[in-house]
Length: 234
Image (cartoon, rainbow, N blue to C red):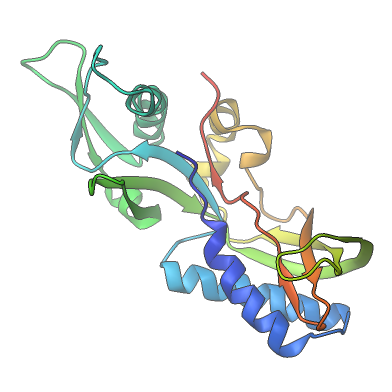
């Protein structure tokens, strides 16, 4: 299962870009549009920030479910994720972790007050109609400092035309309100989610956003996924 939070950002940025920037590469206007997109998406999703540590498919309160021979591949992968993420965030202080008295080596997890503050929950329906409860802890709203470059590239086969133009918008940004639980546990978080998962305050980062200009002059953002970070370390 691939989780993709960026879709919310895409829809909002797309509308603003089409309405205000058709055929115009104004860096100051791009900055405003991109910032409005991030801000509006966070508000719509009621999410604390633009960087999210994905826990797995889990509904709190939760008790460890041991691996089983009957598990599907997805169930097995999800249990592996939870075996790494839940103890980490209990250690950090966003979850409680209590041993289950009647079941050796199993633990009961629930949200702390701090965890409730940074939790982002989103749901998926399977083809069979079951609900998958996805959960992540999110931090760090993006503040766009400046648009440094708008680079038009080559023509490519686009969604609506064979004559669409690809270009890239490069921004410098900072992350505001990075919480202490991220700063104080950055090495542990990087070990599980990767080096780029931690964004520190008062540091300027660079990111390039892909866009497409259609033959009719409309500009929209291509599909991308980089907001919800999946665990991959041990």
